[in-house]
Image (cartoon, rainbow, N blue to C red; front, side, top):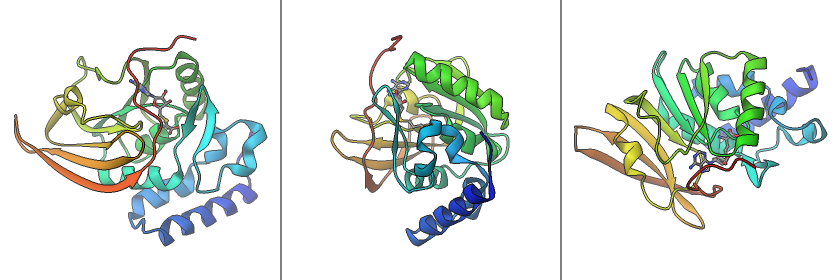
Length: 215
Ligand code: SAH
């Protein structure tokens, strides 16, 4: 599978769509214009890769809608060499975007099949520093905490406290919270026990589930 002029053209159009929907962060738009999203979907679905839509990746999971990826990534405001933990590797697309912005990425997935596929795909693409883990995201990665940034890409029923506790002081957690639809939260750790919570727009995510799935 390769990148082509046709794919590049479709990608430029997708970027224009994102701008029209209100995404203004130039760094985010630039990396999304560079990263071939079609490499994160099965061959059969290449034509779908540059629509601004979520898409099934197997095991009842989806690669997030590009608008959602852009929105969450812009909120994170990643600086070079920051440590970034992502919950919900899925296809690996979002992890690749975080790495291209200079993050040192730790990404966790609870489904073994998706974890294995994304690990292989990210190794093949070689896009920077990304470590993948088959782990329950509710627990985070205490052995590598605290993190500068934490991103949850599944809908959490409540703000995940264990993840808040794995943030550095000054660090940012972006997490969608809610049952059928979710409100995007940006949470900034302003002190050891002080967190600033900002409730933003509504989205729809697959659920943040407990435990591993090794099927
Ligand atoms: N970021 C992904 C989109 C992921 S969809 C991408 O760019 O493609 C959400 C993912 O979160 C799914 O793959 C789902 O299996 C995973 N997930 C749900 N609950 C989880 C948990 N407790 N720990 C780790 N991953 C989880």
